[in-house]
Amino acid sequence: MPLIPLWVKLLRLPRPLLTAGILVFAALGVYALSQSAVDLGIAVLFGVLGFGMRRTGYPVAPLILGAVLGPMAETQFRRAPAFSEGDWTIFFTRPLSAAILCLSLIALVGPMAARAIRRTRGRAPETAG
Image 1 (spheres, rainbow, N blue to C red):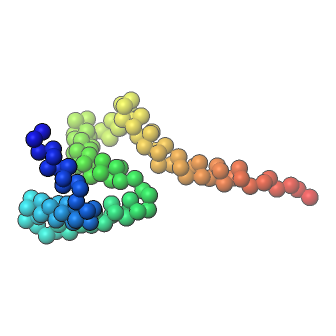
Image 2: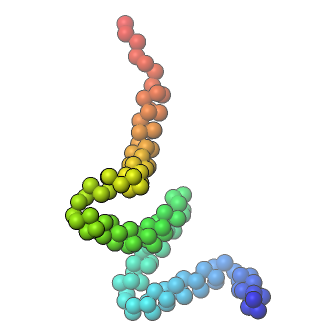
Image 3: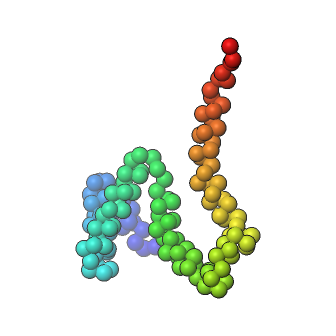
């Protein structure tokens, strides 16, 4: 609480200076974590990807969720067949996993199907003769 006035003054800095400072501290933190230039390059690549996504209007939140939750989901995906003794049908026979797979399929195929339906309804039916 006593540092709030300091943070308010920090936010009054010009935006380019604030952005440069944030980038320097983020790069320093990435490099300090593992002392690897490859990790720094990956961070820069994801930064450029996020910037491009924001400029073109794509939502950035799914990318962040995928980066955070992806490793945990991958671990659980590998663990599930081990618990079911190698039976892959566990993904289809359990109600919750089947519902998640169906929703994923709808999210993947739904926009393409809607576009195809709109395209076919937009055409006038051809008349014979």
